[in-house]
Image (cartoon, rainbow, N blue to C red; front, side, top):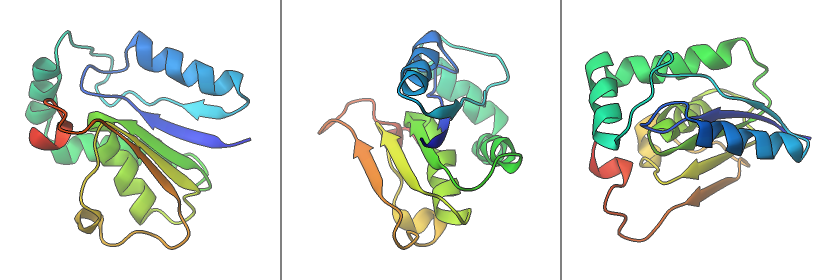
Amino acid sequence: MTEVLLFHHALGLTEGVRRFADRLREAGHTVHTPDLFEGRTFGSIDEGVGYASGVGWGEIQERGVRAAESLPADRVYAGFSLGVVPAQRLTQTRPGARGALFFYSCLPVEEFGSWPAGVPVQIHGADADPIAFLARV
């Protein structure tokens, strides 16, 4: 099946994210869930975004890049909200991406250059989401 690198949202690597990864595993996929927040979880989006802002958005992205370094490039990158940022960066800049799954956010393609030819993407979100990650960055 498929190898997936799945990045968590602003609440951190929560039980819900772990359960989602487990569902993918039950379907036969290999799923990696790096912790961009080094073990911290938060009770609100504002707290998590505040933590990420304090650490620095560049560092959060670099943590995602470092998580991918030891893994083969031939994979699908996925992310929830804040986690879309490193997922999208890796999809667009690391050769070998097989696809991308973005839940609740997406950056303009120009943020990381251009979209790689032949790499499919699914973007899942709600119209006029009042707490969309893009509105907060």
